[in-house]
Image (tube, rainbow, N blue to C red):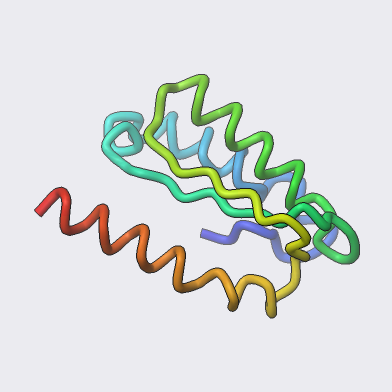
Length: 103
């Protein structure tokens, strides 16, 4: 799944909320069993300046459908690949704990 889109023209239809809503139409039961991890930084500037707004949209969507999720907002985090790299441990830890809980 491509979250950020293939460029300026692709982002509007390839944002996390629209992708999740498309997946809901195909397999809502599968999504209801999924635990989501949402992570964004508060410094929403530069090339990926929609990341914070997308994080907010996803929180609203998760609450609307009653999905299980962990929403993390990182003070001062910027939306760059370097920032994403610093957050990988948290993502892996979250998914590992979810995996072991369900096993």
